[in-house]
Amino acid sequence: MITLKDIDKVYRTERVETLALHNINLDIAQGEFVSIMGPSGCGKSTLLNLVGLLDKPTAGTLTLDGQKINGAGDKVLARMRNEKLGFVFQSFHLVPDLTVLDNVEIPLLYRRMTAADRRKHALAALDRVGLGSRVHHFPTQLSGGQQQRVAIARAIVGKPSIVLADEPTGNLDSAMGDEIMSILEELNSKDQTTIVMVTHDDRFAERTSRTVRLFDGRQVA
Amino acid sequence: MRNTSLKLAFKVLARRKVFTAISLVGITLTLVVLMVAATIFDNTFGAAAPESRIGRMLFVRVVGQYGPHSSNTSNAGYGFLQRTVRNLPGAENVSVYSEAFTAVIYERGRRIEGQLTRADGAYWQILDFRFVEGGPFSASDVEADRLVVVISETLRDKVFGRKNVVGRSLNIGGRSYRVGGVVAPVPPTRIAAYSEMWAPIGALSSEERAAFMGRFNGMVLARSRSDFRAMKREFASRVAREPIKDPKEYKEIRAGLDTPFEAFARQLTGNRQPRPALFLGSLLAGAALLFMMLPALNLVTLNLSRIMERSPEIGVRKAFGAPRRALVAQFVAENVVLTLIGGAIGFVLAFVFLRALDASALIPDSNFDLNLRVFGYGILIAVFFGILSGVYPAWKMSRLHPVDALRGGSL
Image (cartoon, rainbow over all chains, first blue to last red):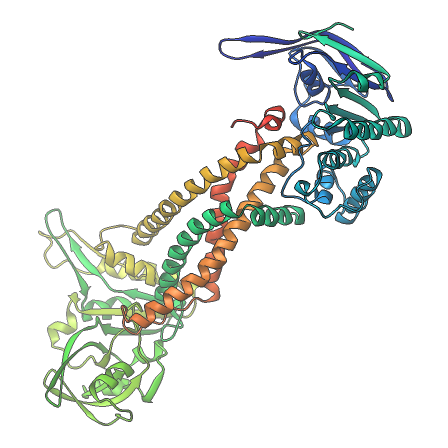
């Protein structure tokens, strides 16, 4: 499903060159639930951004769903993100001007779909995360856990084969974190959605099928 | 523009009240000034009684002789107009009339100044004045040099202070004229119809009858605008045949058979520009553009800071597959919606301002109309303004790197 081969990522400024990732080799099969762990600044989010096609590797090859990504243009990458990937962020990143329903519809805006179909899919996704009764609320009217559930609904509304979660429980207390983790587990087990999750929390990493550990930009396990 | 873009635009504007208010003040003020200018322009050069057929009219207002060391510019002479505008191909009617000039009325011991135009019979056929009393003088009145005058309603009230004045006599410059008709007032912004009194051209000396320069204008009503080109060509060839009286001093005669705007531009530029309408039009368009630039730049700055504020949203949209084109369209849509709201408010304020301008009598007898045509200009100006101030920030925004945007970004 996802293959990273000899991946390096270097950030260059005029004066400094920072090696964020070095020689990463990783194979993630369809339906796997993989966690990525490591201390702050070790390259976890950078790795997730590369897998999410939000950033490009400096060296190495990245294959997603059998398609080599290296050299693909912005248009192709945007379409792949829209069709194959869903994102959950630590700080939710819901659009404050939009209602819960409108937020969840965002990925579908960039597909050929009628407004009625968009609404139908968004309502179904919100039902799935238990927020069917809050569709007309604004994000600021919800608790942190509820906001993250909206973010998960937004990530899965387009039925992507891969969901990338960057510390999805990082801003939540443990009870809410458990709730979010359960939703992700159900998504993985029921829909066979591949999930790659960055986390600092061993308890949550233990609940995934495999843990990749990074240290100073290198893969140590 | 997709419905969702519009919906989002309204939501964003409604929830960001301070930004919306600040932007609207700038946009509205700019659009008010531009709409007032457009209204005055439209009321000057657009079709309205008595110049309802102005779209088919051409004018000769200025002639000049030019040499390396001397130049002489003036209104046309009667003779010049007879030689150059009579029997032009495609002409439906031709009138010769004087520029309005100040004349003095003596009435019951009072001395009242007013603007007097000398005109021929065709003048009343080409222009559709609204007569509130009586009627115009005829070609035979002009031929016979009868002392008959048409006056404006405003002047009637000032001089007589009553209605039903047809047949009464009026002492203009020491000669007694009979009032033949009273017309609804015409504001000074109308190029051909403005005056307060109209009297027959009257007897002219043989010298005046042949004169190259003088105090007259020519007005030609074409059968159709498509005849303009042939008429102008014929006029130019007739002007080229005009003899130069003093060839040592002057080398060239310059005159134009002009549309109202061309005639205005020719007069304003002293008949010195080879294409006066293009020159003045470019100048006015440039001035309008410059005038719009300042608030547009202000809006660009506001928009750029708004993008920074909305950077995570842009990151999210990019992460979920928004192509650049969709982001640019969304942002431009938001900006156009904002400027259209500003345009609507501006339209109302411009209406109020123009009513106040009419009431102030700053421009006598003015009646500035905010009609559908001006509303159309207003919409165009607003959309142009919206695109002008929205495209650059939208383009910058669409180029944000998704990872940077999610972190809060920098442009």
